[in-house]
Length: 309
Image (tube, rainbow, N blue to C red; front, side, top):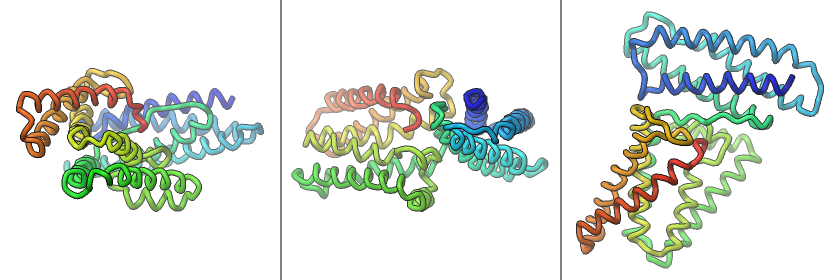
């Protein structure tokens, strides 16, 4: 019974995932609102039926009783959201868009909580990476800040120690927030404008970024570090924006051909601009080749990276 409930919850979560991707601001269309409401009503009815089945099994004992109870709680939360938080009809267009976006933000959190409840049952669903312009700007700003440190402030001997210090701090936060839930909630509140909801439960992107900085710093090559920073800082947000809006040709791990091409093109331009600014002695043809090589090398890594990271 528990396994069947978990699998049915997985199917519901996957359909909710697809629905939330469709109502992402990058894809939203006002003329599809009625169809959106119909899909939402179908999801609500299925969630209610699943909730009833969970309730019927709630008295059963077993080693997985705790995980089953947690999953039942997340399904119940989802039902309440689908019943009470749906935007009212008849609002002006701009208010309607804002209302649907508010609903989407709540639903994304409910989805990630459901995904987290399924994980102890060895049932996995993809994490959402919704459009977040604050996060895009933060991503670019972080890369530019590190670039300034590398090019203007840090002596070569300090590159690795400083990178290691940032990585150590990031991994310490990861450890502490897993054993101290209130710290995790506070951290997610501080970074609520830029964090993806799934990062409340998983290693966040900043931790992976600082870890990558250590590997780059170990090379001791400022040119190589600068090319990699430029590609990552600008190419990744560009790929996300293009992929969500135009990503019709899917590759792996939720990535798209359009997003990947945007990563390579924009990453190449960013790296080329960086080389022309900081390394004018490198000829234009050589700089273009280096920039394109850096962006092209980074594209497979981004495509193969699991979407929950």
